[in-house]
Length: 115
Length: 114
Image (cartoon, rainbow over all chains, first blue to last red; front, side, top):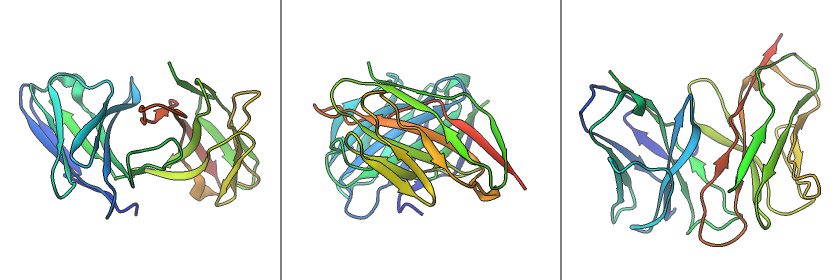
């Protein structure tokens, strides 16, 4: 158990809908990262937040957005969902701003299925 | 940009066999290198890491050495067990600047038969 929690574990929804994925980082960790794992793209970095502020952006679609709240939990919002958004979404956390040597600890993931 | 190339799987071994999963990378500067493991139905777990050239990471009988001259970080284990069956991911994190994301390889599925 990494100490990172994600809810829900599974999510089934329809095209065009909007969903929110939630992540609670390890106690004391200030950085939260979101990754998407799909069969065709593999594991891809989406976005990083550090202590409430956006720190880095990766291959995140404009239909997706995220935020980190004062209690440090984070939410990833996915809207106007398409079939291709079906994937496993991971949240990870690290103690500080994410230096090169710092380990990221991953949650169990949320499996999203868009029908 | 940064990239990680892993040997294509799947890899199927018998229990107690020797394991090698090759990983090479392309990156500027001095990245940190990681191996993560994903057991069936679970999230990613850090297996081991190395943060500078010639460092050896080790955990649970697995080892990998950071070779800057060959830009490699191959994963090895002397005697695999059925419980090692999982997907293994090699990853790097850039050595400088403000880009702290992990770049992953495509993963290698390992199946160990009794």
